[in-house]
Image (cartoon, rainbow, N blue to C red; front, side, top):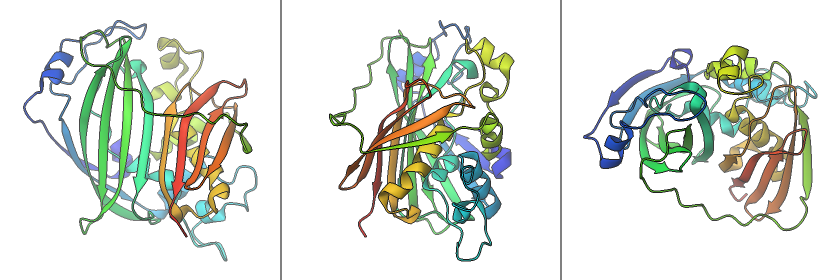
Length: 312
């Protein structure tokens, strides 16, 4: 993510290398994305500290980047404007992912895929504000065909109060086979009954160009030449854009109050393309909803989704 667009200042510190991190420096990419060495001399335990500041304009831009107001411009004014009568500005909970720190360099951008995202909010985000973000790489797993890197960010307000956490996992294609431990599959019981709700949204052809203005300038999402080098027919939508779409579409099922959202998580199963259709399949639960999302062909793009809210 391009931190200059968020006025972020980063200070990185590297603790002594762990055994797994030392092993990582010897890995070479074997995948079709081509063979650069992973540039992380001490990956596990690497810590990052930075400041994230944002304005109401940036939270509006994020909302537009995840589809707010596209179907009906008057329907989501609380997210897309700051001065509409009867609609005080609110922030989409998934905006917290934009405030997380970026993982350290993991290799060629064309070989990196977002695997999982989980955010927890302890209080709602304000339309404008600042957080001090501390982050660390917490684990490295050998998945055979690639390496899975786990990364955790903690967001604190200027008073030092913990606002939220963002946990993500990144998959590095071709970086497996180094003898490390595989990640343990998380417990998940897929719903046996048909979904209670299906919410359909059309993704604009230029959606990735709009979403990238929130900071993620990876050319995999905009440049056909880069997408081609990654073995893709055309640029794909940012995984976190799909994540934001789903989180926004699910709000009406949990009381339509973004300030009550406490936890959102997904596994990224496949990329979504700009111009495609996104269908979110949801099952109600006492704490919120579980969900998955599919593209226009029925292929699952988000899986193992959970959106939990606080009690009223």
